[in-house]
Length: 179
Image (tube, rainbow, N blue to C red):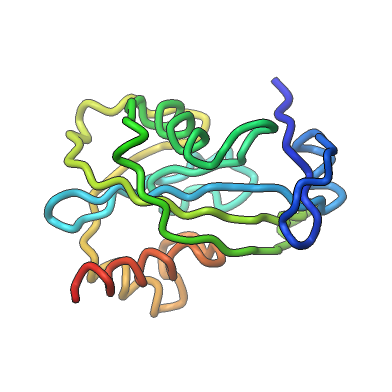
């Protein structure tokens, strides 16, 4: 099923246009994406291993969940939808905390990703053995300590995706948490 996104201008404003995922990525049209981190009471982050069939960052450890904001959606709606699709977890919108936004522009193969990214935290203890992984997206999951994530980011994203902004916002959140 083809996905459609609201097309934004370079300032993040809605243009009134809606285009397909394929066209947005082919022509580098600006659109929104979200990144979600689920953090448990031990300050561990639930990471997913991307499926080997993914076009971008196959078999790499990644954020808990994430994806594109569909036309007409708000970011927090996308968070709820993506967590349900990728991990089988139903979130309450009151448990979702917005922590920031950034833009990113990258070219990987024939995909031009021009995103206005929104970052969200969900503080929840989740039993990973009860998760239902979406096989086309996720091949594995694990809880990772804060220190390990920081070390990997500082070591040139060793073993994790190098998505612009995602990990930096998580590290800023940890700094705030540890004050």
